Image 1: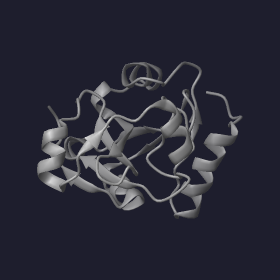
Image 2 (image 1 turned 60 degrees about the vertical axis):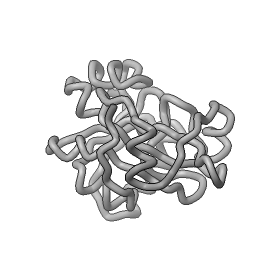
Image 3 (image 1 turned 45 degrees about the horizontal axis):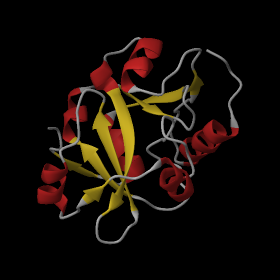
Length: 160
């Protein structure tokens, strides 16, 4: 693992440090763009990857972050039933503009502005999970409790 962090990862590291945790952003030698690639680079299961997906709120047009276990597909109907939010697809330019990161490196924290967040309750089964840290090859380790505290997200059953 390289010690040199890119600007996007530094932004994430600064956010984590400001929130009183000892999280360390790690630059991986291989890609972490997909949950499968991240798990392979880290040496964990795909389910332990907390993938950050940005959607568009169907009513407001604002970004909605869904953090899902790496093996789960998000069921928009379950999200709507649990939260009242209708999820719409967001394109790459929307994601970069609204949250400040490119798809494949979107972290669950340190966005351009506050983002409503929905968390996959399946992540609770792991003592250790991994999330993207701003680039397609940077990650940080945390646990589900910290994920909830850092994001102020709502835990729901969202898997298809």
